[in-house]
Length: 71
Image (cartoon, rainbow, N blue to C red; front, side, top):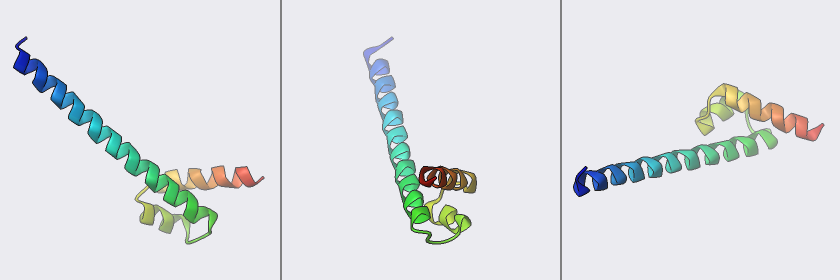
C-alpha cells in the first residue's frame, strides 16, 4: 500500500469518526431537551417528539423512565 493511500484511508476514517461524534452529540442534546420538556410537562409526547426531532417511541421511553424515577 502506498503512503498516499494509507493517508487517504486514515483521513477518511477520521472524517467518519468526527461525523459520528457530531451525530451522537446532536442526539444527546435532543434527548436532554426532550427530558426537560417532559419533566416540565410542556406539550404532549407527540409535540415533544416533533420539537426534539426524536422518534415518538424514544420520547415515550424517556417519559416512562422519568415516571419510574418519580415512583
